[in-house]
Image 1 (spheres, rainbow, N blue to C red):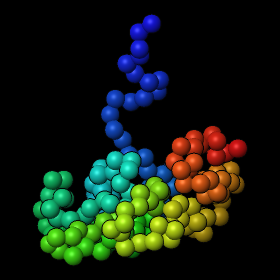
Image 2 (tube, helix red, strand yellow):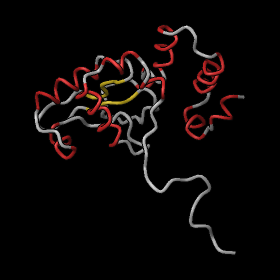
Image 3 (cartoon, rainbow, N blue to C red):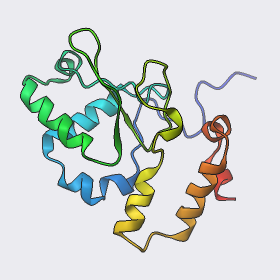
Image 4 (tube, rainbow, N blue to C red):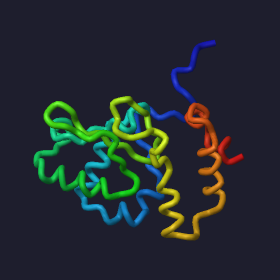
Length: 165
């Protein structure tokens, strides 16, 4: 029997998952367009193993079409004011770039980071949503609690259906 060249349900291109709750949040909606573009460009750097090492330096961002250092700095400042973006390493130009991480993905810790991995605010946007909108379904809350209880290695391989049980 021939080996299948595709996996059932797979797509032939990369994509970046972003929780709808983030996009629908008041914080995301209030971001200036340049900050939204920066967030999308940073998400484009995500490989599945490098959250916390997403680099917003002008050198890297020029490849994404950024031209103005001031616009990039303003966009980065706006993003860092959001609860779902964390500065994981403070840069020291010109040799050491800053790193950022998104809190809806687990932190892929590197010893060069300036953040304690135990204090990374993983899934903190759920708390933000619950405070701003008290009508969050209880099923979603229980899924988040189950994910937080799982060991880090177990959580990375856990499916949503397992977390719901």
